Image (tube, rainbow, N blue to C red):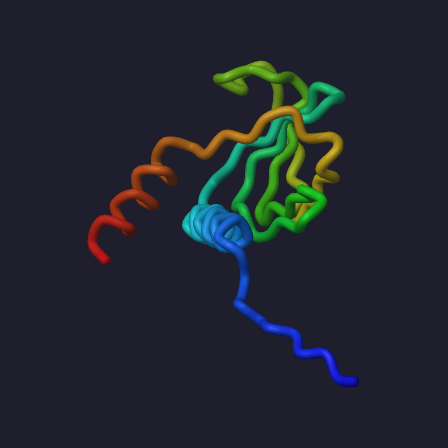
Amino acid sequence: MATMIEENGPSTHEQSDVSSSSQARQKLEGLLNKNMRIRMTDGRTLVGLFLCTDRDCNVILGSAQEFLKSTDTFSQGEPRVLGLAMIPGHHVVSIEVEADSLEDAQGFGAHH
């Protein structure tokens, strides 16, 4: 005896999860190649171009510089040039998009 299985497609709950997931993805894609400042659990701050992230919240910055003190002006020390840097997600305390980069990202979205 055969059993028929009806497929109605994804439920509305699954559809809303997919929708919010794609919105979050679009926001992240809008931040690609923008300057970011990432503060880490050990007090270091890395500044560089946002290149990539993954589901574990690891972040890759390009042209990264490391600052040993967490200050807004960064005037208390010379940065160390790292180049390409991977920051493990569990070490990220905060992520800030630099104002110039954020304005560029918003302006880009407004024209399309």
